[in-house]
Length: 121
Image (cartoon, rainbow, N blue to C red; front, side):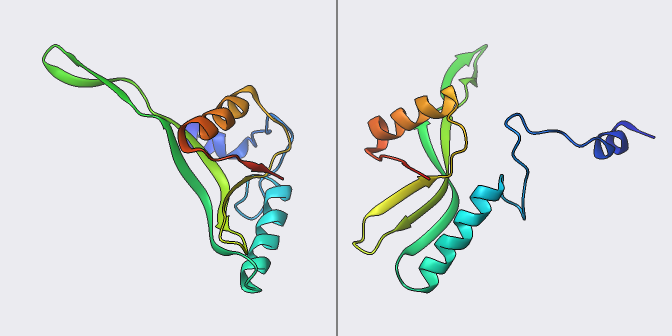
């Protein structure tokens, strides 16, 4: 048995106890996706997108030994869902079970950089 086969046999437990369901990171996220899809089908929201990336801090580059090299990767926030509500307001939504320190910082950066307040469900 090689390393790849061995890794497939071991199921990695989630840090916060959530389980992936039908391609979603949690049961809660899957249920919210189903609700949002139904709302879109009913015409109550529009433009529903999933896993939308927002750049918060661009990558940093420097010339080292005559070559341009990335010295710091970009920092991004990936929203669970984005859509427009009945009033045409753009909504960025995150299905939260637990607010990590990283998430709280990124939530604040979304407001600072993009003037977007994340809706937590």
